[in-house]
Length: 254
Image (tube, rainbow, N blue to C red; front, side, top):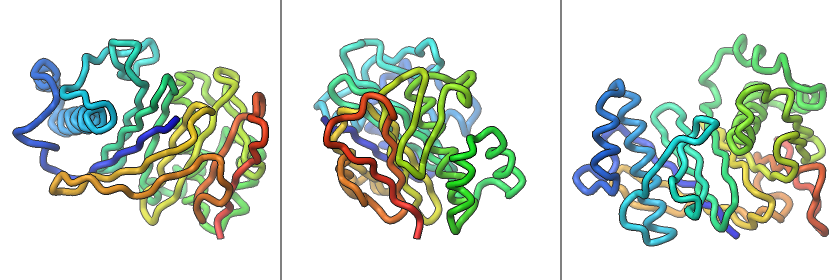
């Protein structure tokens, strides 16, 4: 079972003139402010391109809004997905075979130190200890924050999220009171931190990027069960319901 994470960065509309987004979706975006409209349409075009690549579906299927406020496909047989924005970057995470998906992306230096400190106030002692043990405080805070947001998107626990979720990054573990079996992988790149929360059966995560010429580039494939999947990568798995033979994987910053 695999999941797919694709991201795109740029200013012009994605696939201008050859969009796979239905006209009614384009019309509904007209009432949005310019910046929101651009991101809204780019995310849906990115999702449409991903559905074409993975499933061969030519046009974006009908979307609805779930009870937790996130978009989803009207047809429950279609896969779960999650959308995230960071600066002028748009990302989409698509889960196959009935899996669930939660995606978040953050720019590492986008927040002041004061804001970073505020983000840590409600964290557990284990989370704070891990952050303080890292060489780059801002990057570490951003990783924990991004991990949390991706998992909360998957679980839908937008209210009371702090109480429903505890991370144990030093042990490579997490605990959610909403979904007892989750895994998440978070990577810190030079300017971007991204996190994908996934169902435990997900074995591979395919990473893609679309360039300004709208060409797809395979960045890498993450095998979720392998340790040491990246020098700045943090992978957490649920405390209960551990899969047999699966060891925790956690890569500490150098």
